[in-house]
Length: 186
Image (cartoon, rainbow, N blue to C red; front, side, top):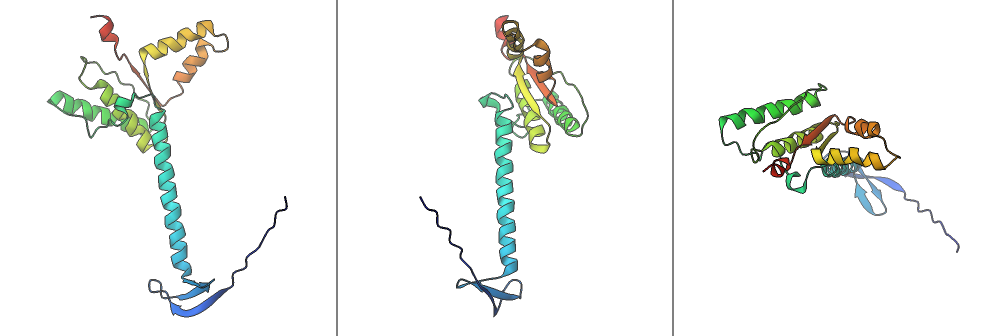
């Protein structure tokens, strides 16, 4: 099969027509008149829109890869329902905690409460906040998942317990949820 390359040459001619936006002479290429500055702005806006879309896709993927259950993928501080003063204080502490991680501090937090008080929702909110507002990594695991990954090393010689621990410690934020453990003791 022969490939034929054709080179099209376009001659640009300066016209006497002025761009209404920039008041500079427009050019004519292949029968179309355009302003050089308008063309640059169009390319710039197109590039910015592409970059924005790319960032949104990357953010969606980071959130999807964060380990959060589908139920919590859209949870944030804004849709956390504050039903009492203690919850109001808790959400403020969680927001400050997320900000500390974003600001390169290494705080720790332990959330304790009865089932249904919003611990997982707030954990998801912290993760989403960090992923939205920084380049930090954040990952959610249940304690059962961590235990299983450790136990898997006992039968898989290709991966050591140290490698699993190194994996868990590689995140800027690691959330370990005892999700569902209360059901086992009732």
